[in-house]
Every structure is written in structure tokens, then in C-alpha cells.
Image (cartoon, rainbow, N blue to C red; front, side):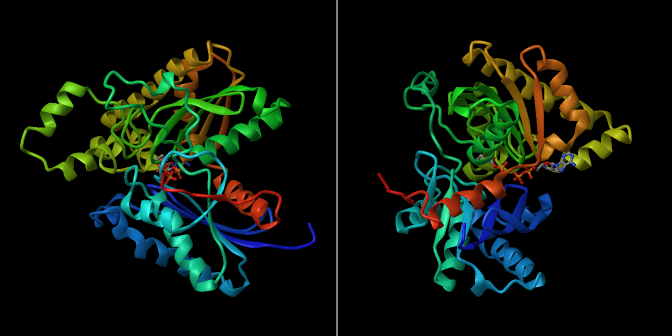
Length: 360
Ligand SMILES: Nc1ncnc2c1ncn2[C@@H]1O[C@H](COP(=O)(O)OP(=O)(O)O)[C@@H](O)[C@H]1O
Ligand SMILES: CCCC(=O)OP(=O)(O)O
């Protein structure tokens, strides 16, 4: 490619803000800012974090001496929009409205498109999002729950699951479109997807739907007991929602969303921390087993990824339960920054037409 495009990458997660600067496909700067549970607890609503997260991004760029006028686009992980196909979308008015309203719920990635838009507007350059958390390729049968008014939703780490699945396929020398994979992303939220012939045909709603509990989410709960809790009069609707997302999982049991901290406690002999951490691994393994049935046991690989995949002992706990299903491949961290940069580049270099988000 003759022309060079510089893109600012913004990736707000539930426990971190990741920032990147890419020159075409080449990363020239990346930084992960991890936020303490107590730091995020100060904000009542997700949108209250907007200025804080934007400031963290601008300060980091300033510290590194980046001249913002040299950027050609801003690209962010996108949020809880209406269910859409994968791809690169321009941030437009309809999207801004849905992100502000939290059309499908609240998650840090809602801030991605909004912050990208504000920075890009000031610089008079385009803002994009790529493969947001609402990418929906689920089969009709997978969407049916036991109540017709409560269908299952596709809300997951679409960007990283797809990026890592493609990477694994390259290494296995098998086209992604012909592979059967189970991808498990373990970050602030945890999602386990069945990838079949290039589509994520089933996945747990890792925000507030179902699946394993995670560093900051409750996951599947005993439904009857949840109803009792909701109507006990002890908690407001907002407090219940926070128990599901933000103050569930490790935060609820151990007062931290930091898996590294939990591992330290276990090393220091904390048996409660060990029990809860074991339970999280156990639930992930059960979810992997369950979704292997979707693929009729024909699984080319099980892929473990996300921040928690750095934890070798945690990975070993899961592997011990599931390696009879297929080989377990581990890709710690995420490939999201590169995937976002590539998504923006495909559009900037006119290899792909940018998609338009519609509120319909
Ligand atoms: N080296 C590590 N070992 C174990 N867990 C880790 C490590 N590094 C990060 N984590 C954990 O990964 C989780 C965050 O994962 P990440 O994919 O960055 O999530 P998010 O994008 O949701 O903020 C946190 O619980 C964090 O403590
Ligand atoms: C809403 C699904 C994506 C998700 O949980 O992302 P984080 O783990 O980054 O919070």
C-alpha cells in the first residue's frame, strides 16, 4: 500500500481502557490502563464514565507526544447496539443515539463509539466501530428460551472471538469458513461461542444473560431465587442490575475483579479465593462441554483467550476438564486492537465499503 493511514484505536472494556496507534497494520503504540474496582464504583451510570475514560486516552497520547492532527481516523470497539452483521461501521447519528440510550444494555464498549466520535469530530476525520458486541449469527433454534417474551441474545466478545479464531485457523492451515471451533474469551465478561463454518451459531449472552460467572458478572443464576431477591424490597432495580453486571462474580464473592489479585491470595493460602476461582473455572468448563454438543462433538480446537488466559494455573484447571473434547489452544490477551486497525484500514484504503448503521 503506497498511502499510509494513522488510526487511533479505542477499546473500553469493563475492567480496562486499551489505547492503540496504528500506522496501517503496524502497531506503533499500545497501552492498557487497568481500572480498580473502587475507581469504577464511583460512577453510578456507565455514561458518567465518559469524560474520565476520554481524559485517560487523551492524556496517554499527550504523554507520548502524539500530534492528533496527524491521525486519519479513530476506530473503537462498539457497544450494545441493535443486532447487526459483522464489519466496519461509520459512527452516525442513529448509532450515537442508540449508544447513549444503551439500546441493548450498558457496557463500557458503548463509550467506544461515542468517544471515537467526539475525538474524530474535533479533528474532522471519520470515526468507525468494528464487529461490535451485538454481532448476531445465532441460529433460530439457539435463540429460543423457555419464555417466548425472553429470547436468548447474541452479546459477546465478537471482535476478539473472530480475530483469534481466524488466527488459530491460519496456524492450523484450515480456512475459518470450514472450521468448527469453540472460542472462550475470559475478560471482565466471559463468553463461550460455537464457531461453525465462519459463523458464531451459538454463544452465551455474556453481559446479563447466561453462562459462567466472570470477574464482574453473575452469569446464569437460579431463576426462582433471583425473582425472590428482586421482589424482597431490599434492593432497587438499579442495585439488582449492578449485581448482575459490575458487582457480580469475583467482585461479589471476593471484592475484586482482578484475577491477578485472586491468584496472589490463593498463593498466600486463602481457601475462599481458591474455592471461588475453582468455581469460575468449573463453570467455564461446563459451558465448553455444553457448547461442544452444538458442534456435535466435531471440534477442531478449543481456544482460550482474554486477559485471564494469561493465568497458567487457571488455564490448566479448564484444560483438565475439556481436553478430551479437542486440542486446547491458548491465546492470552486479545487481538482486538489489531482487528480494529485492520477494520478501519480496509475502509480507508477502499478495499471495503463502510457499513451504515440503521435504527430499524
Ligand atoms: N497475567 C494475568 N494473569 C491472570 N489474569 C490476568 C492477567 N492479566 C490480566 N488478567 C485478568 O484479566 C481480566 C481482564 O481481562 P481483559 O480481557 O483485559 O478484560 P476487559 O477488556 O474486560 O477489561 C481481569 O480480571 C484481569 O485481572
Ligand atoms: C458484553 C460482552 C463483551 C464483554 O463482556 O467485554 P469485556 O469483557 O471487555 O467487559
